[in-house]
Length: 181
Length: 328
Figure 1 (cartoon, each protein chain N blue to C red):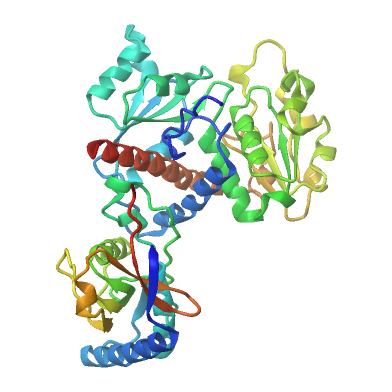
Figure 2: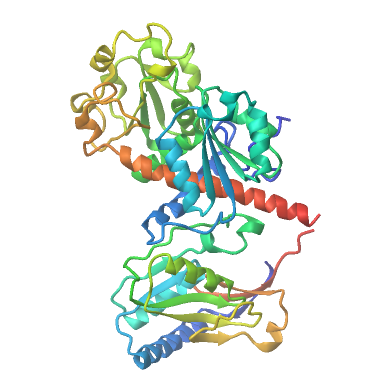
């Protein structure tokens, strides 16, 4: 990315995540879910999940998913350069899962994450929490808890990329993909 | 300018996997890092990822193998590829079909990858030179030359136990002369910058200029394993021996067989490795093979993950190449 500009700084994001924690708590109460398992998606999703995990004071350790093996663009671009091991510390069978990611755009990452998750077992339910939501959905996927929405005038530009940098401090940056000649 | 490496595309991505010679340290580390990711697949309830769904992998084993063949088969299946294993010795080639005709027929069936094991050195390389574009070749062992996935699974096993290669002393014991496994291990250890590499063998089982392998040569097992972090035992390859290279297996064990007592000079936390199959009482006794320092069965598990990584990298490169071609 070039010409990056900061859309939201660390202080703003920490406050957003704290609000998300409250919203998640409400959702869990509403649904009568106790002792959920939180799972972050590599890499930005894990940073957000670590914070939510602390706020909700969950007992079960945090899980991490790498969706490289489930991406739908392997047939086009090959293996993703960054592959990290997925790690789910407890069995997911019949458990309530809170899936956490940084940016929800096309929905393809979440599709891949759900496929990956289901290869570990059959969860009782999956909630989705995302730090940033923007348009350009390509699949019927929606978040249960959203931190913030990208301003509409910015969202109109599909080439604009939204990226979370971190883990310390967090920053949400906007940029444009470098045009390959 | 050196000739382009047939294993790589023009951007340096892995297309075939034939030998570890000529591959960069970065690429070897990339394979090891990817393998970490694939290791977890075996712990999933569904031990499969959809990466190579719709791809067809043909195992061409011109020489017998159980471990390598089955782990390649499992690796391909865990990537969701379709796999056919051809027992070539018992099929068309014995009816007079040439190797290239066999290949052309499999290509006509739209096979995407050949995994080749052959008694002749250079066989996989030859096949890679002649396959259709878009088809990858993986060497599963050729003669005395190379066994690159074995070399990488050994490096992966060492890295998991010992971390940084620069501080390690690695001793390779046994039939160096006939061992493609040793050749691949030595190439990988050189590239990854292992601290000290030793080979320990009777003179009859060493190549003519053993120093050229980049290792210190020992003829005494106790001396050779002194302070070693890793002790790799090689299988005695009777099938490749001509004439009287060895007096007897019993005598070999007396001099070069690994026992707990002989292992005593190695570091207390040294690991013992063997590519299998083990000849118990020849290369090592059961006490060592089944002992706490043995990581032999772990090597087998790691072998599946390494093979998944290599297959996924090669097929990924072919995917990217065919996509680029479609956009031309």
